[in-house]
Length: 350
Ligand code: AOF
Ligand code: ZN
Image (cartoon, rainbow, N blue to C red):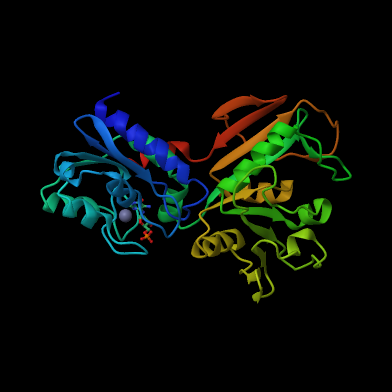
């Protein structure tokens, strides 16, 4: 790894600490290096709060070192005043020597203009360092900006013989405690969790984060004809909840009913989530809902636990006809990760 790559790796590593707290903003890390020594580093910590560069510059005790320093940022610095002032202004004000960037900011309000402003002020710029790693880190943000929809993660647990539930719909006890704990960690990392009506009826889930520390995602239920009565736990108003349907628009405190046109329902629903600033969703079932996303090709990642249990008959698990990107063991369960559109993502660089 070159020096630039080493410091960029550090910027990407610390950027990741923002996961679960910055969406729909990107995770951004910034490392300031003077004579091969880090003199300031920080990440974007909270949506609406200061950007990584601002925190990192504030950390540098001797600001007179900045004109002789290199600034590593995992994303092109922003060039406009949004909820916070433009980062390019900070870098220009301190006359930094050189800026190294992983990815261009796809946000049309920045997209190249951050780099251009730096160049106009005679600041050296290098971009594309650890580009693929940066795309991977901010895959949610890039999907939001480039496709106008949330990043979609499918998750289910199935038995070794391919069932997601018993015939009586009992789906409990397929995966281990360890796998369930990971699922709670995952929930805290995403903006929303989505299930279909059947899952609410059969499991009456709370869909919150219990076995992990972190924010509970917004709950989303697809109940097109509003058949669910308000006795289910998801209607307890403890967490913001959206019910997507064909019938009505209504807001009752933090319970939102949102009507979406029957034609292109899935696309319409995803567009609405994007407009609501939901950068990612984790879809937790059931089979019909998971297949709905799979059949439409509207998913980005699938995380599938396969337990050693066998049911012999029951409700069939969804099937993804492609190779898993990775496989690991979580206690006795196999965890497979699938990725959709991987090749296109790589080609997006060209
Ligand atoms: C940066 N550094 O740490 C982040 C950036 O509403 P605001 O002011 O927070 O701006 C959000 C936009 O700024 C976001 O959409 C993305 O384009 C950029 N994020 N830029 O220079 C950062 N988080
Ligand atoms: Zn900024």
